[in-house]
Image (cartoon, rainbow, N blue to C red; front, top):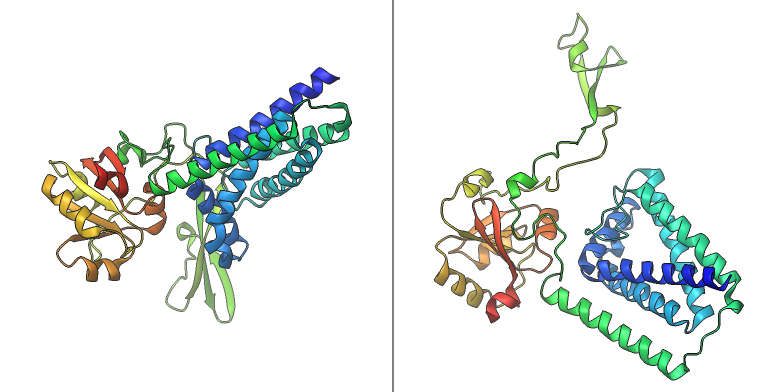
Length: 356
């Protein structure tokens, strides 16, 4: 029994540490996933607090996993883990049974899990923690209290500093489709094993007080202007396998609204894309742009903050992009991309670029 409990304890502890470390590598990614849940629940007013919740959640996962390994404080740690896994099971269960969330973010973007896999994993962990809690008296620790506190404090400081660092720079490991060496055009193509949903378009019309529904290929023989259009909706006839292109929303427009993505990717010389979802006036923009213009002829600011960018940089070329795309491409604003056609040659947070 002791060996079984030891294996179970180490398995649970290491899984929580592993899960926490992956998300601590990119706390903003977890923050955006939390916002996705809050938006679905109609609780968007919590979005301003998701980064703080993300930082706390990652710290709690890693530290409780560590505490479980050193068995200090053992029973209290198990209760905290039980609360955490019940909460995680609720989230993954909601993602699975509602179908409104495609991935739960349990292992961040590095190891994307389906809601079904995530839910099963959480149920197994829940069962394991309950077993450990029931048998907690059978597990003893010889670790001195002072050493236990010291290990927890060192672990907490390490996790806290690591998360602070990646928020100022970039994740240690880039698991996003916009990492260095990736070709954005290739990333926008559907994988060979992808099966798209089979969609039917249903259209609703009204005539003489009656409502009619039909798809575009089956219009009635007497269809004319007496049919008044009311609405249209897409109906999934056959569900696909859920596999999509890694990048689905990359598009850059000029300030007048013209799509310039293809033209940009056809550029024959290296160029720079400076991603910043919003323009922060406290950033040393003049220094950054001046240094970029010294090295590169073509420099573009990619932002969703059109008005502020236009007024702040009247002599720069501004490209407008979707805020979600910019959040995915660049965790730190601004981030400097050196591009060769559609291939990302380098990706640097502005803090590191200014210090190079």
